[in-house]
Image (cartoon, rainbow, N blue to C red; front, side, top):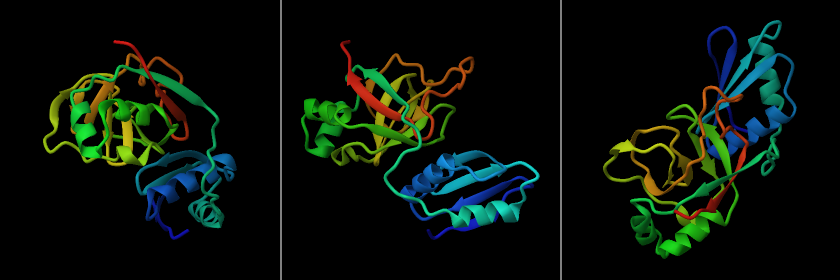
Length: 205
């Protein structure tokens, strides 16, 4: 593991890695066997923020992180959610054209594999899902929309995601769901958290 460590304030270490796969593997390893003092792990596309509480210190946490030997390919949690989707998104035809698939093949590919939340960002409750059919890798739209509706299901790059609330967005919209992925009154508020596995299932309009 080729990592650069940066001290963030009094109680955190930022681990900078080269690839998302390394972030996921390190997150898995630390979540499965958390060293003493570490209280939170926040993954991103190329970094992992490790928060700790005293009596743990920066040097101890840094040593513990560097001692980890991640084993790729395993997930911490067995939690899995099923998200029903109506596949009538405004960009479904464009995704079919970009991938060389038919619209029905796009739906089959999106529902045919188990996705996993790699990290969260952009908006509260927005999970970046990886592990889908590689044929679905498509670029972002050339122009972002001013309003993407709550529950829109989308693709961009290697990722899929569900918009937790109405917001601007540049991902390719392939469908919509009624599943609530962010609820401040819930515990935890986010349905899609790092490590959670996601199956998409086609629903009738």
